[in-house]
Length: 262
Ligand SMILES: [Zn+2]
Image 1: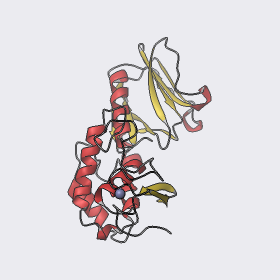
Image 2: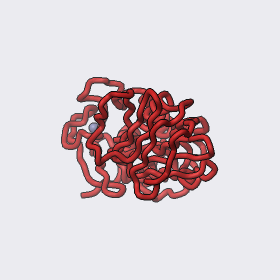
Image 3: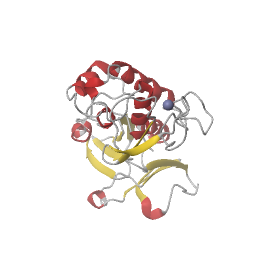
Image 4: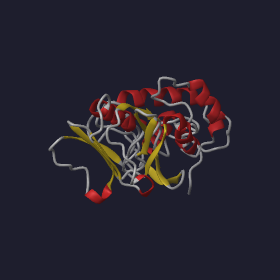
């Protein structure tokens, strides 16, 4: 599932492949921009902002894309067969002489003026992987709604940008609180944010996400993806229920205190 670390790594791959090169092929397969012609544009940079990607071109244009649940960008060498999914799932193609970046299943493909990027990402809170990460500001935004369940608050990109459901679940486990615990009752919120930043940093260039320090494929997370299995800390069976817009929450009823459904 793409979270801030995945998007950061994707931006690095796209920047390495495209930045400094002119596009020899470009195709945006979404109705709003199907006729846009980006051919001959110089790719200036590819920048991650939370879970959003901004690909900037000369002439003051930016391509804004978002991966959401299962979108991805793949980079291929010229002549290489594209293998990121069926052709009908392709939403964007950006090609240079040597490489082609293909965006699969992208729910957001939007061309805008670079000067207007704020329209796409201006609502975001401090970016966990951004050069301007501001823990105090993220803490202030979270604390502004003390009754809100902490799992949901961590997922709200207006509070801080980069956390998806994997990290939201893992951070609640590490903090010893259920995802439904009101933000105002989480006494270690500052440590949760420090941990979040540390985990995303540690995982931003890794192919596999690890939150436990254990690279074994079966032990990379504490709770996420482990519903109904024994807690690796205490052995209690992990529970699962929907939270925050129906995303799955997984928690240990022994290691995590606080409210929980049922
Ligand atoms: Zn436990």
